[in-house]
Length: 208
Image (tube, rainbow, N blue to C red; front, side):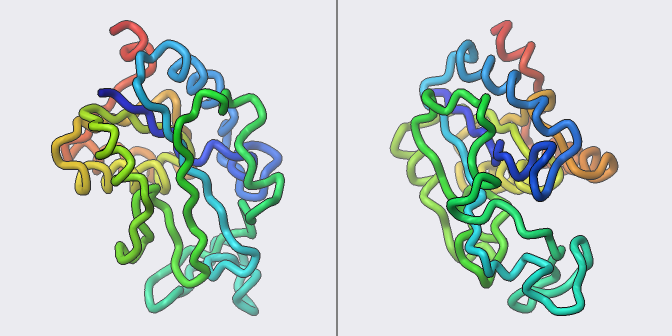
């Protein structure tokens, strides 16, 4: 059983959003081709879903500016612009993403006291989302992961999938993903590869 995980392909991370990833909307047509023709049994997606007072927002820390380094619940924390607030258009999936084909949506980042890059658990690794349990219930043996942003939510989702689903073959789809910092992207790919995560392109998947 083969699954696809689309990470945070939301307005907030695309051009015009509150925390845009350069060229972020370019992942949408690639993701749609994977959804239609990738041969997946299950399509899943994660969605940043922050309360308006989330502690990772610079606006919640007087004197802090977006992208400053700060602290949240005793852990180092990038201070982000307000983004993907629950119920806002910024939090909606990109309008061109073929969401009708998505079988399961995992919302994350709802606890204001901890950030949640991974689709599988909060950054402190204390609270789990339901995604791993869902994939286990579907008896998934292969999982391809892509989306936004490579050096944050995609990377941490892939690493957690590798850790929490040890019997599942995990792959990162590079051309269906975009990142924030070029060096961060290169380091993320190296880290994923070092943990046994395959690095593939959509062309390779569609050619199978």
